[in-house]
Image 1: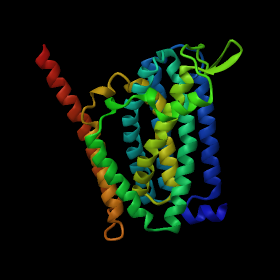
Image 2 (image 1 turned 180 degrees about the horizontal axis):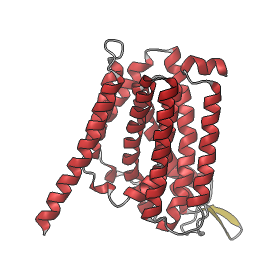
Image 3 (image 1 turned 30 degrees about the vertical axis):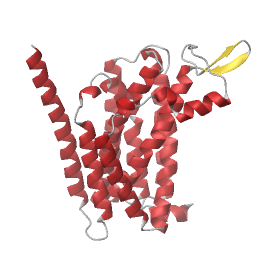
Image 4 (image 1 turned 90 degrees about the horizontal axis):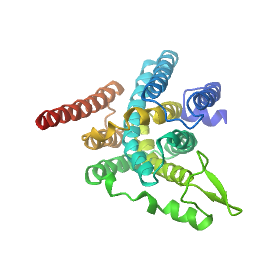
Length: 317
């Protein structure tokens, strides 16, 4: 195992193990502080939790950059920003899922916790596989770059509002394999009805969220490898970005729909990193340039959306 790690990353085995143990401990703390009970998470608690995840991520980024070099530190921060921005887009889909299954607000945090936990496992698997493929087959770079360019174009053309999550293929398979119920059993994923164990809408929503993250991983994994080819940088920045997704949802759930320029902005980000990956053998764009470009795009998206929304509000007065 240590031989494989040395092939795909400068990070030693002890750092991989320590990071995974640390993430597990943080998830347990997160569940104990914010995941118990059936009360809706307040905006204040969500802000505190989201701020804590960002602070932990940036602190680890600073330490990693100091210990393993400025270049890798910049790549880590860039990868974190890319994944964080893609996570915000994921919030649109989560809003649709909860609305479609009519999940009460006070049960949403439980579904999101296990959704994020599943996402961590899936991302870890895909990043390790992706790193090994890049190490064995250099031409995979061009495949990843092509995927990103295709996704960028698709983002400009598609709309989340067209989705019907209840008709998701995973739900049809699940309903064929096990009984389902249309009513809730508190914040539990299953209930027993007439002696038969059935999946509640909470479990159905969780399955769709996990499948959705699988789809999002097709974009985010190539995107992070366009930023860095170090497996640990890709893994750690990706995981730390999605760990705050649950808290971010409760912070931005009411506001995220106002980010009208998010999709064009994400298309620009994915298009940029796709081109960067395709041109890597011809000209390697410096990490600090990538960070500056991506940060500028995200800042423009945020300020532009805010300004247009403010102008529209003034017109209505």
